Amino acid sequence: MFLAGRVLAGVAVGGLVATVPIYLSEISAPSQRGLIGGISGCGISFGAMMSNWVGMACGYAPYGPVQWRLPLGLQVPWGVVLFIGLATFMPNSPRQLIRHGKVDQAREEFTRIRRDLESHEVHDEFVLMRSQIEFEMEREIKSVKEIFLLFRHRVLA
Image (cartoon, rainbow, N blue to C red; front, top):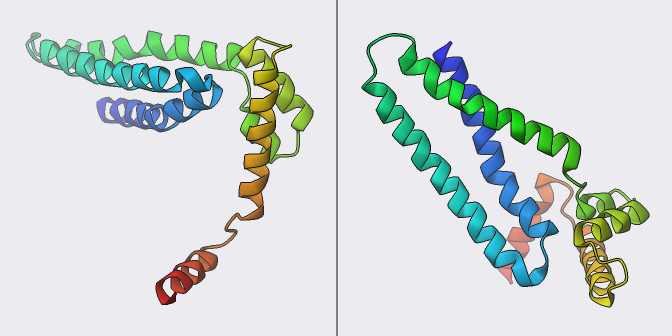
C-alpha cells in the first residue's frame, strides 16, 4: 500500500512539475512571465522541502501505521483542492486550441485570461501567438525519420 501511494504521488508530482511552469508562462502576461515562473519554481522547492520535513518528523513517530499514513494523508487534501481548481476554474490553453483549428475559442479563452477585452496589446499578442504557432506547424517534424535526416544535412553542411 505504501509503495503504491508513493508511486501515485510521484507520478502526479512529476507531471505537475513538468507541466505547470509551461502552462503558467503561457497564460501570463509577457511582463510577468519571469516572476510567475520564479514563484512556481519556489513553490515546487518549498513543497519538496516540506515533504522531506514531514517524512523526517514521521520517522520519529512510534513504529506503526502513523509513520506512513500521515505523510500520505497530508497529500490528499492538497490533491483534492488542486483537482477541483483545475477541473472547474482552469481555462483551456489558447495555443492548443489554435493548433487544433479552434481560433475563435482560443481568442475567447485568451481574452478571458487577460481580462482586458478592449486592449490593443492583447489583440497584438494574440495575433503574434497565432502566427508563431502557424509558423511552427509548417515546419513541424512529423516522424522520427525526419529528425535523423535533418541532423544528417546539418552535419554534412
